[in-house]
Amino acid sequence: MHDIATAIRELKEELPSNVKLVAVSKFHPAEAVMEAYNAGQRVFGESRPQELAAKAAVLPGDISWHFIGHLQTNKLKLVLPVASMVESVDSLHLLTAIDRWGKENGKVTDVLLEMHIASEDTKQGFSREEILSLVPRAQDYPNVRISGLMGMATFTDDETVIRRDFAALVALRDEIRTGIGDYPGLPAGFGILSFGMTHDYRIAVEMGADIVRIGTLIFGERAY
Ligand SMILES: *Cc1c(COP(=O)(O)O)cnc(C)c1O
Image 1 (spheres, rainbow, N blue to C red):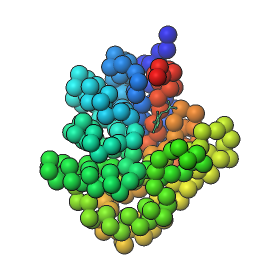
Image 2 (cartoon, helix red, strand yellow):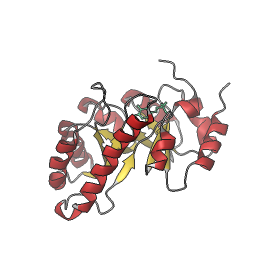
Image 3 (cartoon, protein in one colour):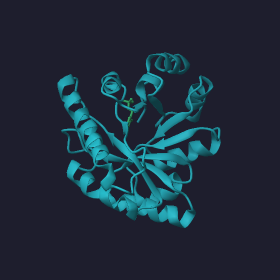
Image 4 (cartoon, protein in one colour):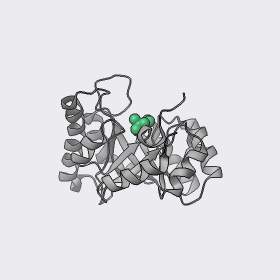
């Protein structure tokens, strides 16, 4: 039996206090979320709209939900009312739709732009160039707060590759921060970086991640 509470406690001890832990509960039942909740965890990550909506409806209201999966615009109404952050904004189309939903529903949504840093083509995200051409127009999306960047490294045990991928994310964040005066639509605190999962979170913390998203280490293997 996987001990969720122990995993949460050990992670809290290990992670520096300025690093936010998102406990990725996708494919695990609400009871598993409650075990982590009772161990003190309040921030959870979900990657499927229906699953997020179902869990948010039955779980405590002080949970902060981060949406971390690919989001189709016809699913916004399941996600945006309950999510405190959408970490996985991977297209202009989606950004535009979140902004429009926010205007209609009176909510400004905190988002991260997902950057494609991995070697695999299967992973989503903007290129560096796309993000650099988007941020000067951030004020066109007043119902979205672009707070930072998110990324997923190549799935490999090769630390050199993982570090190279993460470094691209850090470098782009630093570059945007340096030119922040040119981007009046970005919030003053722009620059939150979300990177690092079960197999690479220690590298991520060392390289300056502000958010790590950890699932398997906390909840055990997922049943797909
Ligand atoms: C599933 C997922 C995670 C967590 O992965 P683990 O390897 O189980 O820690 C983190 N980020 C994203 C975007 C995910 O989809």
